Length: 343
Image (cartoon, rainbow, N blue to C red; front, side, top):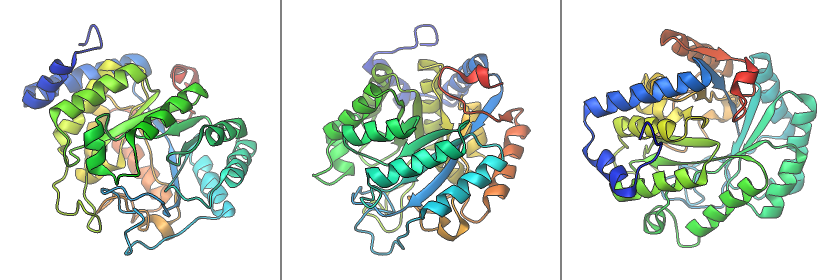
């Protein structure tokens, strides 16, 4: 695989079903060498602004699902969002990630205004959106307003598995069409999965790897499944950190230039999880820029890391963690295919 960057479905299944500690160590070493060859020991920061936890969807794994009556709902206003950007910019961020539930109040007019205002205020910055499923026309309008990237995890490439994770009205074919639309419009497009969701098997993971190989995303988000106490999956066990690291490493080997975050979920599952992600080939970390007043309300899963420290404290901590393993946080947009231009 290290030479050809591909495996067939049965080979993917065999790896995830039979890997040993030695296999994981070897995959992480290969992935780390691949990432260093592409990016050096540079880590890009993306500042996440969680601007709404209101969502029309009812995904069985998610703490902000619409049926969770225990969730305290909020929306940030325009000034709050710009204040988060201002703090991030002062601390060296050159990408802002606007992430929220599928909240209909943030229609195209409002979202385009927000994106356009950020781009006018910070023309040297990238804007990434993570707003879920929208129409082609909506994605087009947001792109024309200045959005650069879009994150939309596909969750699983297996239709039967997708049905186990979502109610009937949420359909895999719609999710996949959205990803195709985003690619067609020229977004740097991100997909991804959780490791260890109920019903996930070596066969479904093999489908995910083959899908990502064919789709060629510019970004991939992979983290362990962590249950939330107020969801139907409350009693399910956490996803394996080791398997998460293996999949991250395999993604890096398969797609050497992909932008690969070491996720908050990985840092929640294990104290040094984010460092381990970097050592498995990740090259992006995404600290939280959201106001402290809403941090605990955007709880997609239990015990989410980073909810008790300020944005500045979180940035300082992550820089220290990266330094401990010999990596440097760099100021730059870190666009796909242009990383070394930001040095």
